[in-house]
Length: 216
Image (tube, rainbow, N blue to C red; front, side, top):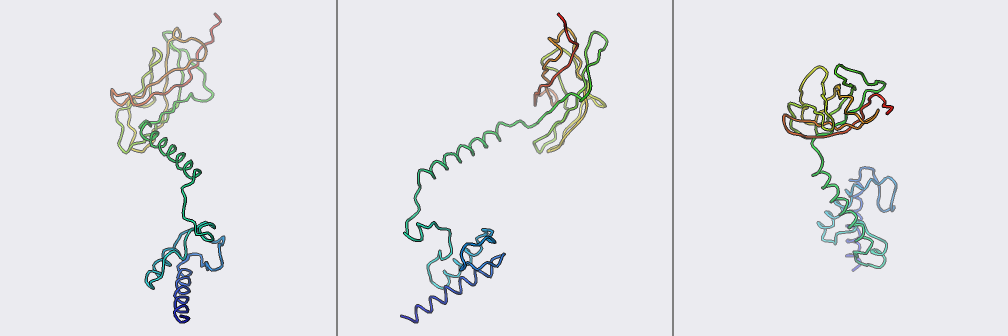
């Protein structure tokens, strides 16, 4: 009986020493919880493997609560855990919804800092903007153009008429927006701009448009 117990004890010691050898930080788990532990669980895997080879129960090294060790209580799905699972499920559902509902293109059009409006022929008011287009897909987006949706006017791109945004790429540039002064309601209007790929509307965005102040 004593011999069998000694044999089992030596097997357990060998398993623990083997676990120590595989630890990337060289921790001896017989000294208890240590700050150097990186929770890689390599000791758990090798210990279970060695215990299985020497015909002893697995789980000598494991994650367990104090009640599990002292009172041998089995895991319980408590109301708190149910609440955590419910919150986690809601967050996952929101994340999946955002992934499915997100646009393929992100557009930012902002007025050039420090620039005022400019009078053009035909009572037109012009503002200059910078734009950034981010393609969130892996496919190229061809023949991109801008159109003014909220007001009657024109949009002119600097240096090119149409362009493309490569897959997972970024396009930047400058454009001018011209609106007839009679269509403006005040000295600062919100205008809506549509981004098109050919004849297909792929994104819309709004920005501020400055005009002459009315004293009516």
